[in-house]
Image (cartoon, rainbow, N blue to C red):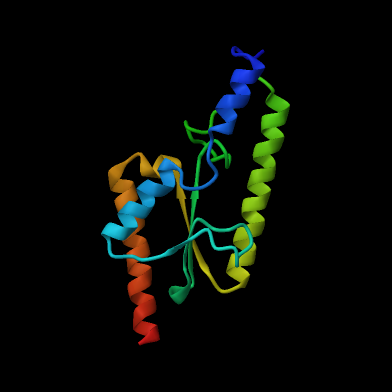
Length: 144
């Protein structure tokens, strides 16, 4: 049973963004601070990936732990109401994620996935950005 009215739940859900989320903005700021430039949500790619660096064949997919069903994560808790709807929704999201990553890799892109929980710890987010930066530096050597 839901603890708030149907209209209030509808209002709450309508306020959830699909792009330019706080999570995305945080990751983008860290990438920009590291000197990494990128494109956002390109319509050219299936699934409109969050961040694309086409020159280096790199896609960065930023995932919320709840919405994408992050395994063994405290941020991916199951809702107490309407459980069948939410479990089906999360399963479909996971299936779509697998399909998108498969297509991106088939097109020759390297895919970095950054989970919401990884952004909560500064050190972990820093290491993810460092890994992306290292990847770009290696790619630059091959392109030059």
